[in-house]
Image 1: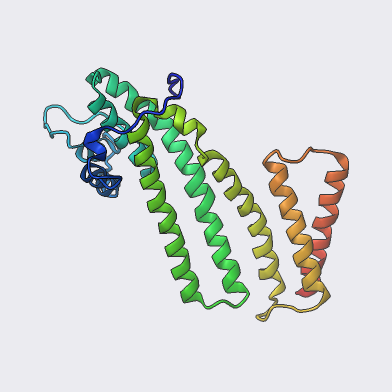
Image 2 (image 1 turned 180 degrees about the horizontal axis):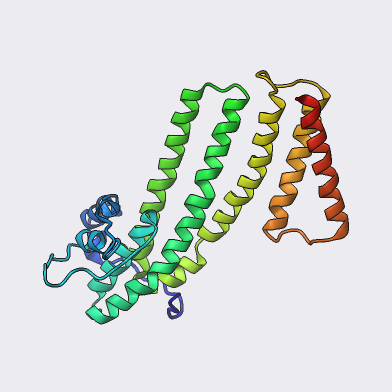
Length: 261
């Protein structure tokens, strides 16, 4: 990952903020960021799409440099490169090094937050709602709405972060809440996995099993997978009493599930 200088708080250039926060240049970059992935190819990955979004002239003899990123965070690169070009002093060689330095953090942060974070979290939450009797159509609609609100919000946030910080966007990314937020979603995935598995097993042949077995299974499964989630996230010390407690919860959960089948 690149090592930028100390954090600064620059204001966006007049060319970007001329008409308020929804200036034409910002809107153009945001809208074009949705189409970048459609230009992916094995030669330069997202390089052609990024060059098109930035308005770089196409040249058959000089193909775009390879570039890759999580598509939802491509706006970080678009905004930071645009800001750096307006500020001046950005040579083609320096811009290439800058784009190359952005590839790993934008890919890793986006994958951890989206594909390993909120997508499985929302899927498991939707499955759990359907298992306890929620109508499937509203659940699917709710999933799509929430996912795309997060998706569009992340694109817009990333673009504005890049426009605000330019070449020093690496510092801003490091201080951003993306990594902790991804950790929270993954802990939620562990917890929901146990709850959904418990509910699915306790349904038996169709209806959700009622009574002591169901209650014991849900409580034990909840505590078990909450503990595992915090343990894997490094929030709990690995001690013998904790191991014993998790083992007993696991036995109780399995016994309740088997008793309700």
